[in-house]
Image (tube, rainbow, N blue to C red):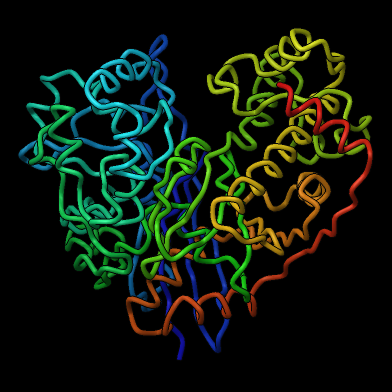
Length: 484
């Protein structure tokens, strides 16, 4: 039996509407539309352009409607931590802040003055990051919160605008640093301590929850007719991990893109002093699973370098940069990708040069050398993160599954295998859309469970394996990296 589903996949640079067709134990994906996700900049302030995203989504849904096929359901997924505030009429209160907006610097002091870091972690199991929803909400002007009737994360806000039903799906709730994973509910203790209004926090929906039908107006406008809106897995990383083509029980993952989310899938949260000190996070996945992971800055380093070079009139494709990096001399200089200086969208090549100068290392002299420095540093951080996560759970992984768009970066995949001395399996690149769609299929009864979903992924997509090649050069670079 053939069934079809739509995934609205929103990323930090672009959004897409994807059609997934499930037939004979395989899934086929078709991109129906792609649209840019360009933040609005107002001086130092940064906002998301929600109206532009909605225009892109409507166009994609109309493309789906034009196919004239029966589609079972639709669901949105997106990045974590950011949110939309709705007023009593259900309208969006603008602006919708970007996690890179500088407002959180002062709000961090407010949060820590009210609740210390050990208590924050004990309640939520979420790693400490300046961009966490908890800190962002404490940066809100009281007048905006007073006008707010409901808070929804980005993906859940899209599902609300499609269905009229406002809930936050569990995988997304668990990223906010305001949700207690052991009690499976909002942490009233933290919400009260931070002085946030309890009333704005909606019901938390389990993964694969059917919210309701597509709004009649949208159904008519797009030509889609009757289909359901599902809270599949609202967090893009949860979707990507659900689509890891894993067969055994001891594997690690990297959801590789602008951010790299690296960790292990485990049955229960690990909320211990050791986990807090290593700054890992516990996020909910499908079927009661926990994604023990660390947020790593990821390919943002390369993306912002590319943007800076383009602003200077030097346009490079990602393929160009990968080829130049592959030809550059290995392990000349390393940096710490987690250094906060690399978070802001600014002159990334200059910041990399400054870091190398300050640490007494050679300054990369070409774009290829800069990108190689960034990728080698990421691979060393991945290796450290893997060892830390293994220490927390007490077992060793035998494979790292790299999924998402970054899985296409073969140089980074090989560097990761080498640095971590572990087999790396890359693919699928479309893991987020695949996971979103397969969980919708579970909701519809077309797929039995997560194990069957992962079997479908293995049957549907090619992967590439990278075997480790350890060397003395890597160990020397690791020594320098660990001293940073």
